[in-house]
Image (tube, rainbow, N blue to C red; front, side, top):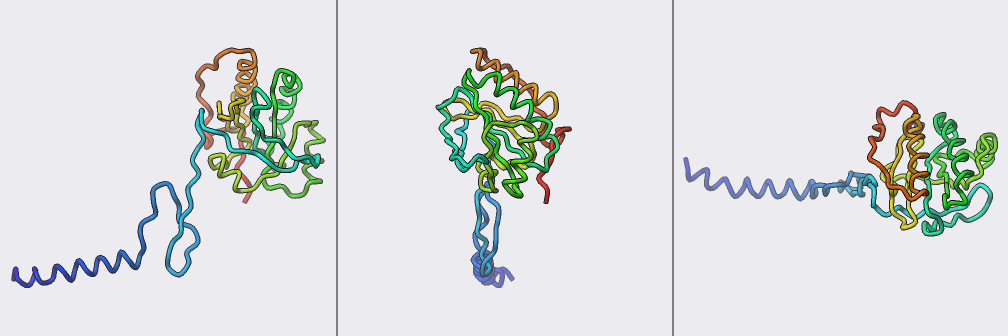
Length: 214
């Protein structure tokens, strides 16, 4: 009986190897399977959330005004990067606050750039920002930018970036607490004051935030 089992073990091991080869190696940690081709799964890195101190991805593109956006972080003391869309009602409520903040502190070294998601037409976007009175540059972005910035999926999402090109803070949604935090943090840093600790609104629970339309 034991002899028969001993003879069977090599065949069992061989069968396991063949199954592994046919299935292909497992996906590495931090990746998701994408389109399968001929039975082999390729992978792409999963978005990694940006944390304070992380380098901010470079921003480039043409603005609604037809100008090339200069993504040099060192040109200003602080830059607010605001992801938004014309379909996002909370964004429409938040943008006038950002515009007012810019007008109050542009001379102090503040810059704001709006990254528009899922643009329909330049004309519709221009009509939207003109109705609100937004003057800061608007650049249309696609899925690659959302991934680069940590997998942005809730709007508005805003990042505060320093002149060294590193993320200082992230704000999700347009709940009063989040918008007030943006204003308070910008004014504190421009005044040379340190930032205190805060508890941001969880993305899934932000009362004034919108997911991207499908």
